[in-house]
Image 1 (cartoon, one colour):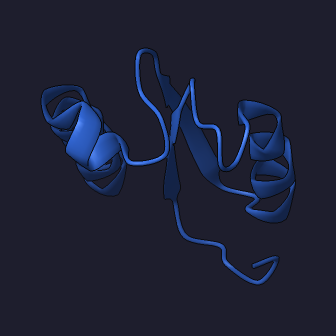
Image 2 (image 1 turned 180 degrees about the vertical axis):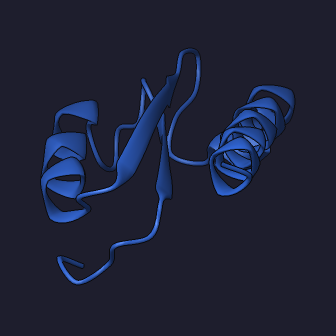
Length: 71
């Protein structure tokens, strides 16, 4: 993953019992241009468990990327 240079969104469930939140640091270190968003009240499948929060997070990330591209 160290070769990935594009903006990357990492969405993590705060109550993820499969991959605890502290594992996120490994992903952030490996992905130089990563944005992390943790969703509270959510386990391992944010898109299924908190779909509105997940979609809002993705839309906000994409909108920010679109603004950056327009500069």
